[in-house]
Length: 403
Image (tube, rainbow, N blue to C red; front, side):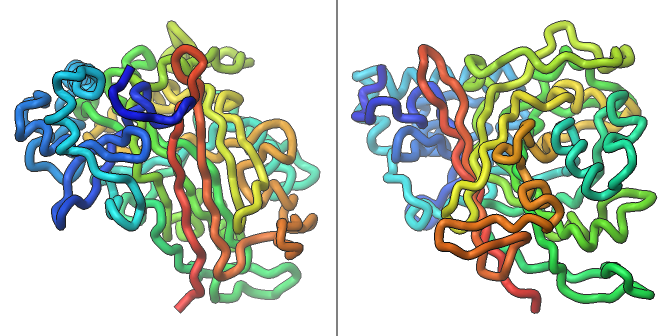
């Protein structure tokens, strides 16, 4: 038990300890959240209270820590837990604690994104999108159950929670129009996802096995892959998403370490037909994460991550099977998380069935897609040890008008 006075059922208790980059006394540092406070890890290593091999001392992001690898990640986690549970270390640790609040700690990007890949791994989402975009045809493309489909995004447009999202402009083809038009997107959407942060890299030309997932993945973030559906619908054939996706992707400021999610591991859904060799898994599992999407404060859906057809380990294996190297700071996202019913969909495209069925918010207004000034917040939880609940934080963004 920690010596901190935490509320019963605290989702950011000693079982969690997500990493962040925060501002303390005018300087940036690496920290972990415990309850409603942040423990300064950069200061802790400088004071020799923990030993990360120098990866945290003087650091403002977890970038150097990512390179250290799983043995160091696990050892430092044990040291942090000891620091927050050993009464004898309490005086030294208390000097490194700061109250948590967005406006006080100045949470920023916790790591520099090296590369960004987004997958399309929910069968429920892919089937819904297929019916909406290609009515009268088979909802899933012929390749969908044979490989994890994805696209390579722009790392430079990944932003931290709280960053405003400017409505993108591009070409779109209005119904029955003789030619495409250019202008701000009129069908701006969200995608509720989970992102996986790579720590240990790999050599070029070397594929990463599904069994090696934990050796390379440091932790998870919540992710919103903002999407301009009208731009996407016109441009995506034959090469897939481009400008309809690359304007902004938001992530939560907290990186929940994979070690904290052990109690949330669950069997992944059965796959039929059987997958090819490199996608097979000795221990096939996923994570029991539940997301919640709020639109201007109204809860509109609760997508269940455990239903995803393609597991995170399979996504990582597919991403590297051609020899593409992993680098510390790479980010790969699950794709939209959607369950089998409308109240579990992870996009407004599905929630309003392509804009044909408006959704009424608690203030009485109705929406099909995002309007300027709308705010979307995605939160998440997972089972923790001994019946506890683990918080994943939140990712939020407000839409601003195109310039």
